[in-house]
Image (cartoon, rainbow, N blue to C red; front, side, top):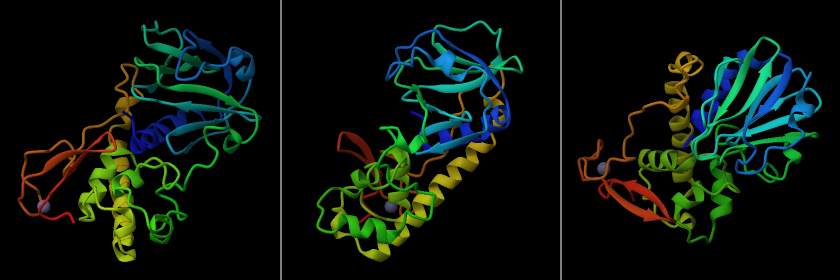
Length: 271
Ligand SMILES: [Zn+2]
């Protein structure tokens, strides 16, 4: 599933191809995504100039000069730039055709992605209202987490995946950040001290930045016509490594379920 670093990498890769371009039309081959693609989308976007491509949480936001196109990649979505006459495959559901003859093509086999229109600011859209701070922005601090977790017995890993407290960390990066901060994923969030939260916030940022940087090196690939989707192989410290030795202390890494998701941790050095 594309997580925040993949979405940010996608944004950085696509922005130079989109910004300043005019939209000729939208081709909707299948409107049945996570939410229906607006029927009037072609009329809404035709002739508009794309001012910039932004990101909020895992949403890509296309400023169309008088309205915003909101894109989400869902579980399996990917975006690439192709010559507009490139034959579409069975999962290529939406094209945004530019005046350059190039199209932004959404490929989404599982159709949990989204293509929506918001005539006001994107923060007015119901999906983006009340989103917590971005983990890479200044509003996300140890103090923010500390204050909001006092008295809470919720496992810290679930707190990191709660979009009302911090948005877009995701399962892989929650596991990796907790390992790097030496915090057990099932530890009650209310029983973590302020200094440990300070360390955790630093590790979340470092983990996400490293992942974005790793993605940056694959940018050239994912805008190519044969379109590798902008995901990238990374070396994880604990994620997906149950049964292997901890890179820090040598204990065997374990996998457990916390809140229906896999948690990977080292019983030797995470408390
Ligand atoms: Zn360890």
